[in-house]
Figure 1: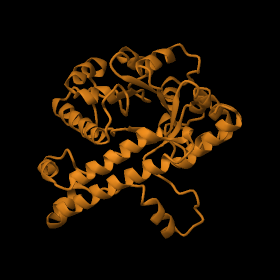
Figure 2: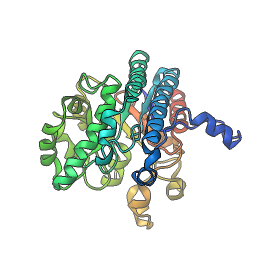
Figure 3: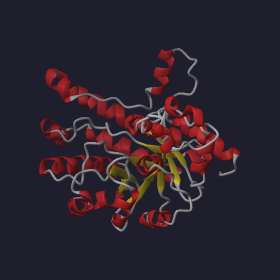
Figure 4: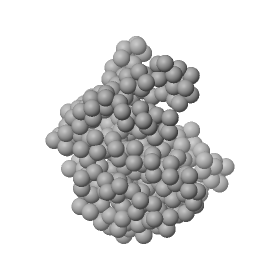
Length: 339
């Protein structure tokens, strides 16, 4: 049974409650962070603060995975945020993390989260941010990007993944002026676990799906439907022959696709049909506006189009309402008998 998931942050559904009560519920599942500036400005408290945040975040991940594991099987899919161990790759704090005794507790909590995910059939992923540029033509950027990706892989190891091909998805864009050829060289520099978990996603401006397919023997390919629509100004259909290449790249694991929808401010007049990119552009709406994500999935016609992929793919919902949006799509999937 394929899955519908959400990214990083849990949103409590009853928004009628007092904000303080909502925050108390949500903070069990949503991580904290800090900045290098704050840590520099508060040197006496810096290490204590980092310890507190790291333990808090590891517990949040365990709480989040445990909660998701109790949901219907088709909703057991969640992306974990990147801020688990703040400033982990920063030169000033590398020794701190190497020597920190509390990390045994962090690893124990993350290991328990990973065990729960495996035993309860929860599909996990991570997504390093835009500064992780593994095809950069600038050596210092590339070095930092590899360190950033390997930080995520360290977390994945702590959760007990990275042991087989795509037992965990760690997704990045094929960004950087070096393109696919530079990425191939970078791939060789990654750890064994990193090479097992890495996936590449098409984006809106620089790397189309066709740019990724030549790398399908190395990495899992992630199709982002919204990015494809923005880049190509048309929809990819669920019978496109390239989907077979994407499936094969996952080597027996169910592939994940990403789904986001333009903000209603710009496409509100097209409910009942799929928005036409060229019509919207002719009305003066720039792609920079259309690429922004909506809170929910208000267009049932587009939802049916996306759900047509569900028999072959898991769907990661990238909407600002997080799990509320994934539940919305799940409800429609049940109505139209896709689940």
